[in-house]
Every structure is written in C-alpha cells, then in structure tokens.
Image (cartoon, rainbow, N blue to C red; front, top):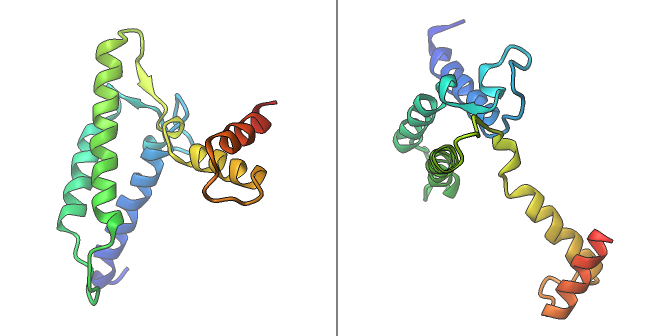
Length: 139
C-alpha cells in the first residue's frame, strides 16, 4: 500500500469500528470483530469512544462552507452511549452488557413512517389521527 493511502486506511478502519460499536448486538465475537460484541466493561469501548470523539473533533472538511451536522452528532452519540452504559450498570447491578443496536432511533422513525402511511401520508396528523395510526400498527 502506498504511504499516501495510510491515512485513508486508518480512517476507514476507525469508521468500521465506529459502525460496529453502534450496531453491537452479539454476546461473543461476530466475524472476529471485537466491536460487534455488546458494550461491556471489559471490551474497551470507552477507550474507543474517546479516540473516535477526538478524531471527529479534529476532523476537517475541505471545500465545505459549513461543517456537516453529523460531525457533532457522532460526538453526541458517543457521549450518550457512555452515559447510558454508566447509568444502567450503576442502577441495575445485574446488567453486565448493553446491546447498542437496541437503542437506536431508526425503529422509532420507521414506526412514525408507518403511522404517516396509515394517515394517508399525512406528515402532520392530529392527535386522534396519530393514535388511530399507531393502533393500526399494534393490532
């Protein structure tokens, strides 16, 4: 690999680790990828989160008029994951790991999409329309 590609390869490796860590769901190694396992004290996630947060804080986007919101969003995501893990493990002593795949916004957005579809693609339903659309998704 040419020396010019090392920085790109390093960034791609970090991004792969990032996506694995926010979609972690298995109790053991999945495809040999440590960051696909559930968030536990022993997996070194906190160190990874700090490294990636530092990476995003120092990331520059050339020829962009403004910084993409995702840059700050990823930092918020990792701060939130650290807080959730800390809260759950302190409050519930029996919880030893956290499946980060289960605490995403995607399922909620999918549910809202179904509700809008049940309301005739109404993007601003009334309360009664929303409740009716919600009931259709559960029954």
